Image (cartoon, rainbow, N blue to C red; front, side, top):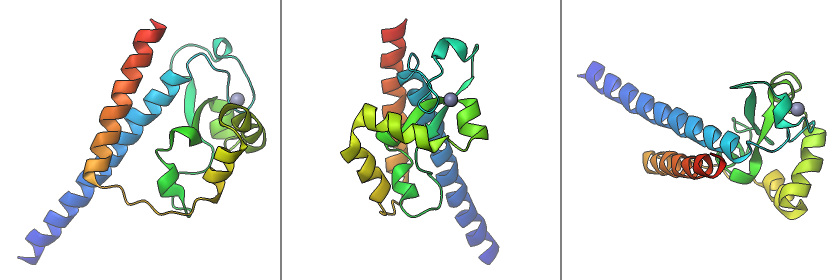
Length: 147
Ligand SMILES: [Zn+2]
């Protein structure tokens, strides 16, 4: 009996996690498409010099992880921009120039709002499904635009 309950709980957890992962994949794909022709948000490398296919990342300005507010920033369109892999993966986002460019793109007020948020957002299944659908829809819109 206990074993059954445990495995049911495990299944629920796994489902939510996989939904989170699916939503993140869709969200990141949308960001890369939205920013397809924009230079790296941190170092300004033009997209033509990124190389072919899969060479850019959806780089979070402030981490999406377990830090305070991270959960609510995870799917914030304003907190995530396309960057080259070098900046995102090897320079930890290259955040000083990222911030300068971000202020140009979205304004200081919005950047500061991202920085001070400490809301903890618990994403539920409905939220995650909605984010995935919305991100896919937006990505397809941009794909048509750039065709
Ligand atoms: Zn870069």
